[in-house]
Length: 114
Length: 111
Image (spheres, rainbow over the protein chains, first blue to last red):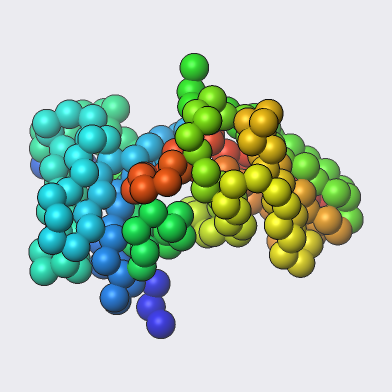
């Protein structure tokens, strides 16, 4: 079956513009995660969705970052008024089980803010 | 101090060598331990998954967890050029939803 897909694969934007990144999880997976990977760094947790529960937003770095998940499937991560330090690879993962650790990652969206 | 420490390398070894990759951590509540492999411009791929202490073997890969020392390892036997990638350790607490990752070790296997 299809894995986690993300779009766009690459995004170049100007400082101050808003961007939207999309994630399509594996069908049937109830949990969805967003991570950020900066150059030479490990993955940094951003936000987590599980079913209809309130999302865990504890990793979002500022109020410029927000995410939503519509219909328990597709998710969009929005960054408003982008800054150069937002440049990174944004990775989405989905999981069939809560707390199992078996997260399946998409290929990521490479964001460059000029 | 980061919760999970991992030497970023780079690490370069000849084909056929045994590779040892390691992470240390500070949070004694971690119970789930994982190793992910990430090829260039790809997402991380789950390699090994271990609960609590002990060893787990899968083909040429062996994962070890020593909770008393807060130290985990991944061994790759008979390394191949196709094993060249960045290896990330990750761990989580029971019931927690987020994974805490190490920085990743960039590994190159030379033919």
